[in-house]
Image 1 (cartoon, rainbow, N blue to C red):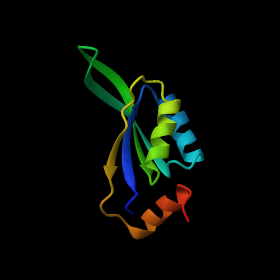
Image 2 (cartoon, rainbow, N blue to C red):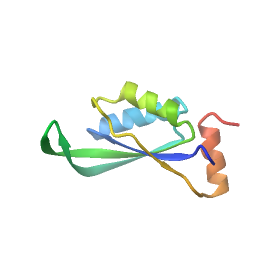
Image 3 (cartoon, one colour):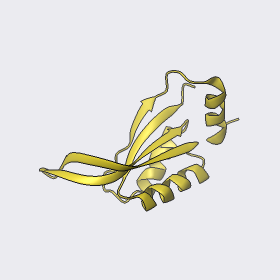
Length: 105
């Protein structure tokens, strides 16, 4: 469980979130990607306050470094949101599945 993290990543639209999410699972750098459309983001970019409709990906993995590299390769944003949150507890059977789904034993 010490390697388990939940990663938040926003995408510009539903199609890209689905395509990249599927690629992450196929590459086994993510066990699961929840795709949550309808997110409104308000942020500062290049000195201006921006607003954008986005899709949030909630990604579960035990392979953070590989996941980050894959997102950076596939993502259309110059600076994609990639924020990892540690998993401090969880259902043991789910955590075992998580590790197995990311290529673990």
